[in-house]
Length: 277
Image (cartoon, rainbow, N blue to C red; front, side, top):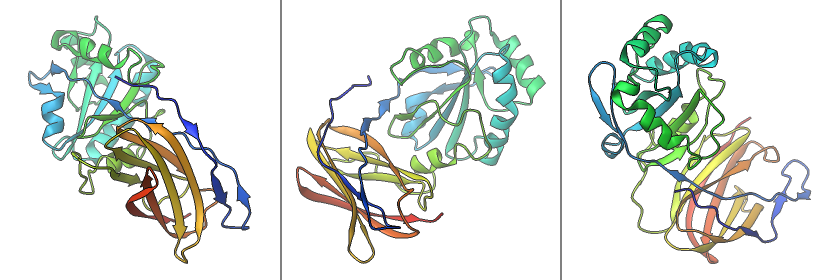
């Protein structure tokens, strides 16, 4: 369940590292939506259980679609390109297509896959695909704006909802990286810590995921290599669990920065962020 929390922003400062001026910026910290489990039977007869697949250390990209919709058809080629670029399901990145149209049975989906050159596993009404899709289209993950919708689900069951649309060849890469497909990430933390910062190096913005072991006041501070604090903010009453925020980098010069995470004014973690524009 996606829980909306009240955020009480205290004073923040953001030093423009080009000019030295202080400008205001109020970030918002969001709780990560949690995946819902399902089992489907794909058109090739194999079955897939989401939580079992995630528990094996895999990341799953869900493609919610239906066969007669022109926008799904128009993006199918790009999705296939990214699927093959990431190992065609042979590595730790899996692509699953779920049709939400009850009229999309195995025969209809097989014909669609053949026509548009789709090779990743897909499930329709015969295999419970529409029932599984409905779990994600009910608003619990975020606003459902229609098909196609793409969601990247990390091994810890957190959901990156409605990403990379219109689809681009590299549009999933930062989400896969954030799920730990290229780095070792602790998906079972017992204490407050940063989880991941991506992309890193970053140019326009960095998404910062962290875990809280209790309801807390969260403070984030950013220092440059000379030890100068160039940015800070504090938010109160942030719920325990996985959370994230986006850090815009338009006011950061190229270089290395140290990001400090404080919980109730106590330093708990430090990570490096490289800015390269």
